[in-house]
View 1 (cartoon, rainbow, N blue to C red):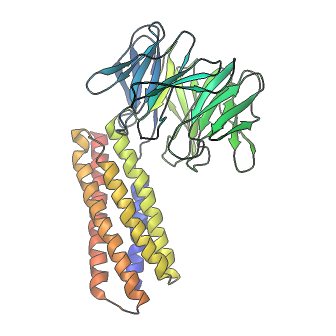
View 2: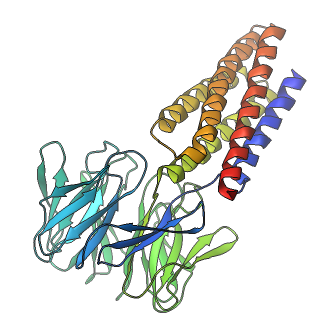
View 3: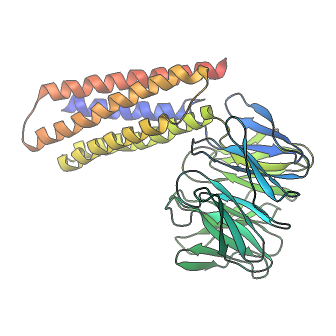
Length: 411
């Protein structure tokens, strides 16, 4: 059993290697819209901007995953026509929704994995598009002079509503069936929303546009103060490194660039020009797929850490449960993988990832068998050999996938 434990630890190290390999991790990215029909979306794979034409003068940008394919699509709110045009493959959908002075919003109002559009009149009335009925659901929440915010406050996969009260310097978030009031803010701040602690729930925050952020901490019921930025910069947030937490960023109006926070400091992206509006999203299937690989690699790495703990403690019940988690996580990873139609340069790497996951499912099955053997005092070398065989094969396919992704990035 000692050789088995050594191989388990070795495999966990390989998973960490996958996560740290340049080019394999990609998360949310930034972009800009000129409000005249031109988008520039930062491509994290080649380190430049992809230019997209969608819209016309006087339209406002809105983005969302309209079809639940894991990729952020573009949209515009037409203030003159009081309607939305949202990008689809191969064209667009026209949604008649809006009125003068309304603020466009987007969210997954029904929890089906696809985002929808909506508007808020800044006086207490929301109109949220319902794709099932082809009409808007009207919700009363707020009052005159409040600004709309949206987020998944309870981690149930449904986007909830909220308002920032500029007069009271506080937030009111609709946390069904209650309304939570959060005393946070001061004059002239910009409200922001993100999962600051990686718990799967969104929290609120503010930025003073001078370099000071106040991010609500739900654990201690107060705000964490962060210094990042300088006067005249605009806030933008996203999960830049796929660690499950929302990181900070600023758009530098004077320099026409973004500064993105990371664990070691920050990254500077030269993107933008005068008068643009900044946006955040996962812009193509390649980005989304690489993000999926990184996400499930982290889960599987955690699973293998649990195997090592269970073996060291001779806790064979935990070992069996971990084997089942590996099976469940690989199944979820395979299902998520099937959503993405990657470009030709990543198709072979995607196939190798599928082979890796298939092998890992067998690793989970044999982990359960070995755990049951150990509980019964049985030492079955055949199960151990099968475990090692599938483990070796998964390592081979994983490394091959990493190699192919890195080769594609360098081309």
